[in-house]
Image (tube, rainbow, N blue to C red; front, top):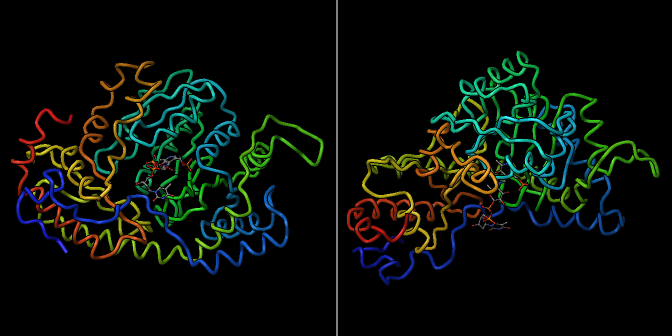
Length: 403
Ligand code: T4K
């Protein structure tokens, strides 16, 4: 399908876009419609729509079995899940160490509750928090560590847990990307004091909006269950501060249907990831971030790293792709520390985050979902080849036009 012969054929110069329709990064993975509709029908007939209904309970049981964890409490989204989990761990003030290289929710869930996020730099290979850089950030006000399993790469859990024990800190993992991923054979969901997954529409499996909090600690689970239901025990008795973090029945139905399709989503993701890797391998200056194939991984994110010496900026490449209807994303640009309110509160913190600063300018997230076909991947890769072959001309065109 690739038909560009000269630079003038690119859409930015007036040519026709490569794709007639937009190719999204976060196209939702949709399970078998009939399976979902059967669940939806049951919900309709039962007139039980939310408040820990039968589908939510069934979903929790299925999650616990899959992850090998004692509690996997469904919630309305991962951001509320993180807010609730950090409070259920007893943290309502002080500082929490968190990466800046993450979706802004990881920092907002703290700041929202008057807890100070202290940004930690990352490992340039895994893109997760650098466990070697945590200890120097610990102060008498530090209460917890909130690392993120970026792209489903599991953090350095052993070192982080050892540090937490040494300094009496809690550990809450933001596992928004890591559903279906493992470390040393143990599924994400079992690390730290608690973990939070996202089942947002754009994730490997979704419940429209949603997430779950996992823990093997019965007491923490008890408090979480109270907190997501306004603190109610029984009908009229409130024992705890709480919020509304409940998952609805229709979301749980989507979750149950999605769980039955999870293996096929992951197989498709992996096939695309391998295909992208093969086709991009011979483009000098670009490389696809690889995952540990000895562990379970969901292969949901296809991340391309643009070498600084390549002669064209990441942003110029993304600009060309977008014009061709390849809606690639710059996850995670510009890093939480460069967003409000953090950039005003801590204007110089970037000096302590050299790897974060470098990486936020280098990565491109390419479309990958059940909707991304083999032919799509081929065409996107051919486009990347074309862009890189013509990079000098493109960079001249972009000089001064974009960052
Ligand atoms: N921690 C981490 C590390 C996270 O990555 C996230 C969420 C969270 C915590 C918080 O989890 P939740 O509270 O959301 O459960 C998207 C998602 O909205 C967000 O959930 C996700 N991370 C983040 C990485 O990506 P945006 O602002 O980039 O989304 P948006 O609307 O631009 O959509 C991305 C692409 O997907 C677009 O090209 C359009 C396409 N799309 C999107 C939706 C919603 C569809 O085709 N269909 C859809 O229904 O944040």
